[in-house]
Image (cartoon, rainbow over all chains, first blue to last red; front, side):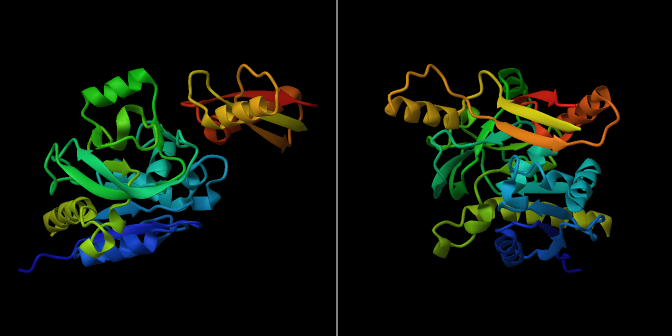
Length: 231
Length: 79
């Protein structure tokens, strides 16, 4: 029997920008990419959910603070609580932090400048559904484009995360002033991850790097395993 | 009832916006030891008493207006 195409949803909020690129990249990596509108109270039948980058609800008040209360975010939170795979990219990461699914918060870049460039990242963990195609310690290159990407948490929380091995990606060079150069983290259970860099913008060498495909193809593969397990 | 919420970056949180304001003020010749930039939210609340209004606005702060990881807030009820 042919392996089924896993269904990976991408939520579109008012102000999302990278939803289409995420859908395109997931489809290119052999997923059935499913657009999800922010007003949907129940997710369609999905094997994974991606919250994309952009400026949901204008990023008013704080980044992700309003998107956190949208119907689709509530549905994504329920999906995650049931063990579903959820990946938040950039604004999606900010939303997951505001929603309490991931620890910490994303603050204005230390430089006050919007940063838009390729950055080297060090992969800390390769045993997650989001990084199985990577190797721990590996250096990969994925672009960032954000004004509010400085991940912050109080020192005791940072110690706890480090002890739990929840840091997934670190910047390989100074970027935005994040605590411990943290670029991506996961929840304790390992089924929810957020990162500021944009893997969906780096899935083809023509785009400057295909390293983003390591993250997204890991997700698609994990989603496929889950889809097969349900058959 | 009118209410005002002041949201501030917590002490110890790096506030680059405040630093930029501080250095701009210094360029203008003002002597400033520190500048921190927060937010003001003015609200018109439907409440029968000052206490009720305060309780409502505190809830709003907890749920949405401030993020306790990085911000502190102060509620003023104007009656």
